[in-house]
Picture 1 (spheres, rainbow, N blue to C red):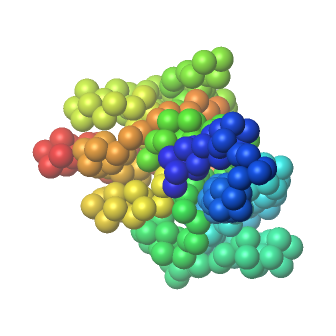
Picture 2: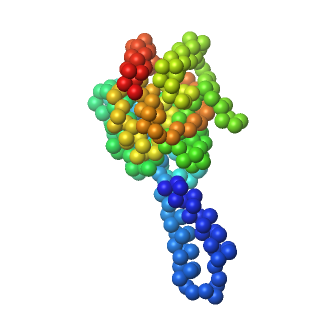
Picture 3: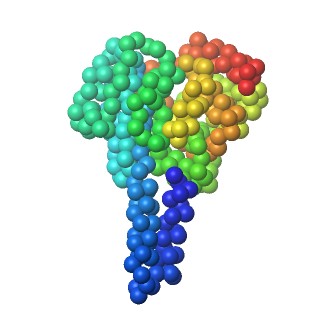
Length: 285
């Protein structure tokens, strides 16, 4: 789609200014108008679906959804948010229902599940209900700021990437990735996790554990079908699988901010699961 658009519009301009003769037959003019119509329809067709898995995000959800809708509306882009709540006991789903009334069911889609079933399966569940041709996955705890979404979209268009992944550990031009609000132990753990995966799996990306990404929907559907992990090693496996399948990945520097409200869900069991995931991928991929 992107390549078709990029070629059609310059062709239209060239033909209009250099080839069109008002005295020529009507067929030439009609052809030029059809070119313009095709370009306009193609450019307007992109829609971005954001999948937000939630568990006890009652206080964060209104903030992140407001920022998402503001970002897309400012950029004049078509959008929707798929909220996948795993039976949060804090009333997250009730807040989501209020947000749906506020922004409309065409923008806020609720697909709750009974019980905490895992991050990976939440994305699989949410993906089934997306209507956009691009899918963004991000955290609902305000760690991923929607202000980076326009830059991710720009990079995707510029590089025709199948995936644009947010990175805390690389730069692009004047934009630098980073982390805010973490203590030394958390930074060390994240860096070490990425280093281990980089040495063993050689994924070719700087931030394998990040979970702020933009996918072409068709690509995400294929990658997720081949992904076996369901928990915290899910994001890592998704990227390793995508690279192994030959998909093009670009990186967008982001600033990761520790959650505004609530407690981190990362614990010792998740770290063990991650290490097992690295070893499993090293054997299989």
